[in-house]
Amino acid sequence: MILIEKSNARRSRGKKYVLRNVQYSKIRFRGAYIDVLWNTIYKTARIEAIYVPPKLRGKGLGRALVEIVEDMLKYMGVKTVVTSTVTEDVTGFWEKLGYKKVYELHGLSVYMKTLIQ
Image (cartoon, rainbow, N blue to C red; front, top):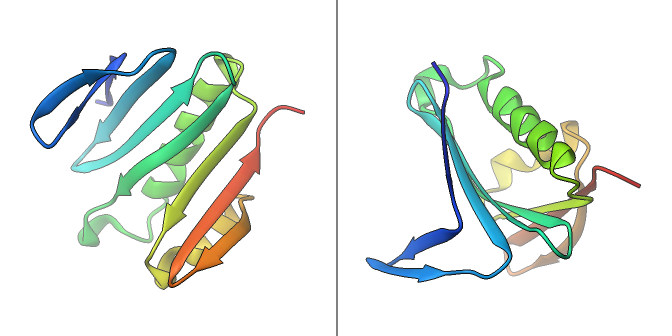
């Protein structure tokens, strides 16, 4: 079973705050999850986090989570998705999914993908 949590608020260090015109969703499946924020006015999104337990890696679960999120975002009219990583071993993961590296500095890599032209 896939669990999808939706909210227009997000927790930060134990404090709850409301982000205007921003939606938040967490999708969970078998210990794996993906967090995404999207702006309903600017039609942009950011994948905040993605985690797949080590024993489930290499089986397409991460790809499936990203594809679910991308489909949801397209349905919402989101045009662009960005994400970032400081882990070099996931660089190929994002590139295989069609994300382009748009920025890199001190080990931080930022990737972007256009969903809707």
